[in-house]
Length: 296
Length: 251
Image 1 (tube, chains in turn orange, cyan):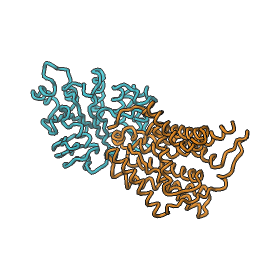
Image 2: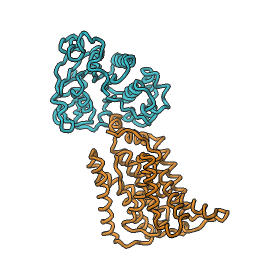
Image 3: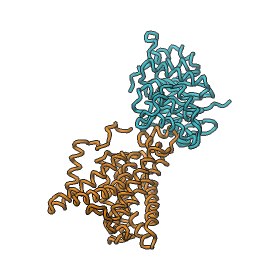
């Protein structure tokens, strides 16, 4: 029972990180029909920012703040430089461009930072184990991960459903032409979507760094791939779907490893992707996805 | 007095196709001008170009002494040109209230919209009962009302209506045209695109007849309605009196 509880906490924490990354993918996809694979590089640059400020002796909350600001700027720049000139281009063009941006940023990072992994200076508070009673304990990193994902998802929900800009964002995602006829400046909406999604990736970068303990220029690939799977499971373009998919994936991974025989646990990604295929065979539109007609 | 809206020799490419081939038209203040013609004549492309969704290849679109061809769609709305687009294009997953409020986007965060909402409810009482419902759950006629009400929330000085009666039951078509007549009586300047030429010529002051990207005919709405060519081509001749020109079945 203790093992189960412990694994439950791990799964919740892993799902939370995936959720923070997946939301950014879902927001951008909802508006632009762009699967932004370079989102992982936003996270990677966030992690390097965190290490830079951490090494400069800044306090942890300030490091997180600077990371979030940096990733928001990176995301907005990416949109401005790489994606905006392609507005109206076919979806495949956008997809290939995002892969190109991803590879370009990875290689630039290898040039500037070197390919060697660097240790992530996890603050002592995050390494602490906090007893929960009943033999259960939670690491500071897991606690912070779960709580920050929860708080940020609540704030994001309020933003999307209760604010003017949130309504403009939903309107633009549903019908960009009609949104323009309402007087909505679609470019502003897109910038806000990139900024928020990238800021959340910044938070994920710090949490991922603390979890893995080291950073390197290619570190963005795995989280963005997992976030992509999460958004597909949940229903692409749906923010609640992306969050749900992230937790489904987090739980799937952790519990497969926990309860599979030891010799099979290195195949955990194979199991995860098999599960993905099965889910998509049953529900091609994802768990929360709707079968709305193709947009014009 | 200079017209509220004046198009001069506007050419528009729609993809590789030249959809609008040099049209000129005018709408004066408080006027209701109809733009009629067959499916594919370029009427919708013309309205979308006025709204800034398409850029004309050449030509000018002057509204209140400003050339709209240089402006973005959202800035054109800011100048007081609102459109209720073809196919209604309401936001189906957003509530009726949110749809209406989005219509007032350019009036700013602090605009007092209570009186505007009341005005929309006076025109379309059913919307008041549906405020909390998702737009997509409304009937076709109610969605058309929402699309028009949403455009009215911009407090437009020029209202562009694209095919407001398309695909609606005859009773609903009648109600929509009643509202159009009422808006005109209230002094709203309107450019109306319609396939239902008969109804459009009944409410309009003046009309332009479009054929394959050109203005083929123009003039006083009553005169046009009595013109034998127009009658034959767009009003279905005497035998089919009362029927819309090309059938309202276009999806």
